[in-house]
Image (tube, rainbow, N blue to C red; front, side, top):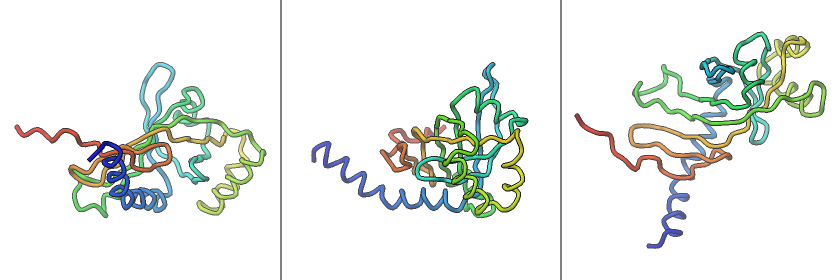
Length: 176
């Protein structure tokens, strides 16, 4: 079997997992957010989001450390993770981790209006209030690459479209 045949077989096998990735994102209302400040100090937080095409949008206050980090750093990592109450194995929770770059959306442009409207529809009237506050900004989070894990030995690299690009486990766990 040649290399291109192996690649095609891998993509065919990954398609059911692609739908599990989409399902994990769709059932989430927020994600975990990791940022770095100018000195390289890490900060973790969370943010409610909406997804428009392949970009995640968050409406966040500039008073929050993670917002300052996102505005300054332009890079982030986000994670969607299975609820602890729903998992069968705490060590193997289903999760999607995405490396991404960020962009700030100008207030009252077409994208701002579309996304804020979707945020209101998804997260309620609070968005109507906070979107009018001057310290809240809209940030687009654009996936670059990531990984998806849905159990022991079931880890995959994903591309910028959140589709499986290859199986990640080329090494087995080491026994003591």
